[in-house]
Image (cartoon, rainbow, N blue to C red; front, side, top):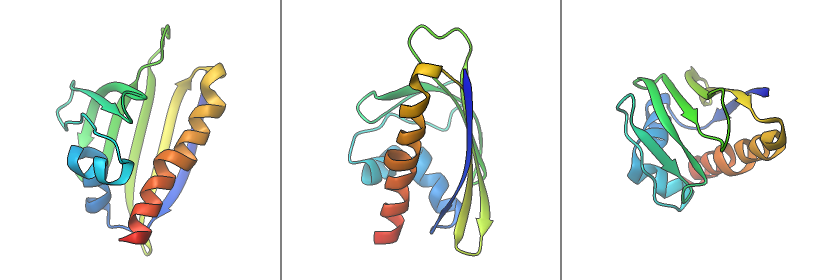
Length: 127
């Protein structure tokens, strides 16, 4: 199991970015895919046509999102924590993803950088 931590600077206010990460209609705008998402702790979520599935654990509006991501056959929970900090260029997004299965690590890191955060960055650059 491996952990990944990275900071991203995204040109949007924390409250806009929070909405983009938690509102299904807004998620669909920047991913191009239908999303199942709720800010209710304990609710299940699905992104990118079920490519990412898991459970929402904790929310602090405009500041924090904690999720468990499911990996087939994994015993230990893989936890994603996203912290949103105001930044002069918009938001400093702190990402921590723990307990990533070794065999999935490179794909997950690439997905975070290109598909997930890359899509968010592009969405706000265009907006």
